[in-house]
Length: 103
Length: 103
Picture 1 (cartoon, chains in turn brown, blue):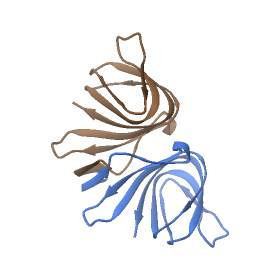
Picture 2: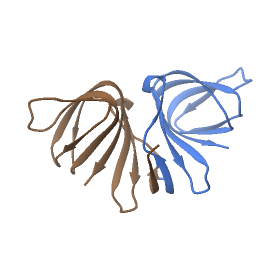
Picture 3: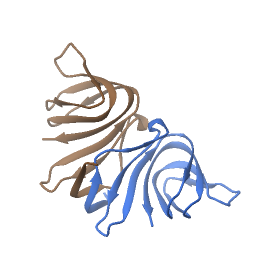
């Protein structure tokens, strides 16, 4: 299984939407942060402070990126990038495991 | 915030009960494993392979330990230990953040 080594992990979770979206923050050796998270079925909108690269590790969902009119469909695995200072919408159909990077 | 440093984290989540219980495995420097997890409201039963020390970081739940007839109530924070090769029951009332150690 893929792992991140020599990292620092926050003990407490980040909890959103009454626990339907949760993550743990992980600090890599170069000082950058990722979050490893789970989304349960539901509709969500998130704002971004920085560029976010969302890697879907497993799941079934669709994503509406800022400025787009067409939803991006992901079944299984996929990756999308969200610009900083924007927002994006998600419609999650099955339990979705993700890894989000910030830059 | 409390953190674990110089650890290895599995990228993919452990997913149970259709995502209502999820965790990430974290390997400490001494080789021991912990899991950092979230439980959503519901009733669950878990078996143990080793001794498990469950530290509740936040939540509202009750726990029935093996051989006990009285439920242990936890509101907020608490810790309980489950012997190896047994099972325990949980009734989770609010989103619960936990850290589980194995030995």
